[in-house]
Amino acid sequence: MRYAVDRSALPAAYACHCTDCQTWSGSAFSTQFFVPEADLRVDGVVVEYAFVNPMGRVSTQRFCPTCHTRLYNGNAARPGIVNIRAGTLDDSARIDVPLHIWVRSKQPWVILPVDAEVWEEAAPLASLARLAARTSI
Image (cartoon, rainbow, N blue to C red; front, side, top):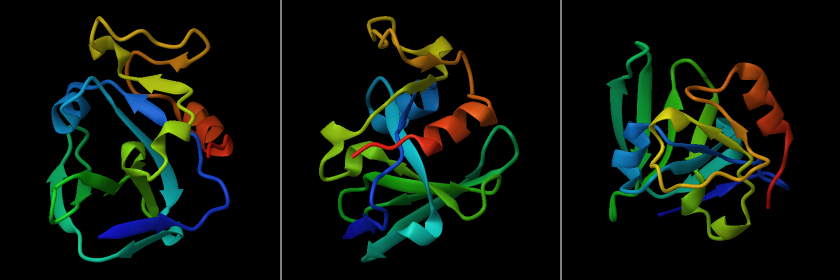
């Protein structure tokens, strides 16, 4: 299965250091970015897993049916917007990651960039809007 994002430039990503992202990624954090769902084209079948998150909203995760890599998700709090895992891009090394959230649970050996915007928990909407306006790749 493959996916494509119909945009000339992708928005910058953020790194989430929450314990859920650490567990689901098998790493110290996950990197992701938001795009309108209409800009995402998926060729093939994805597996969906939905659950109610701690804030009481339904989060629908989408996985590759072959390797079970988590590719993107939607959330009832953000209808029409998907959150793509930046590490699943063909050229993920070029993605810009200026924002780090849930750093209160980051691994102690992770060193954040000195110029990064950092939040102990979730970022406020104004930070996410700045991130969406900034482009990567």
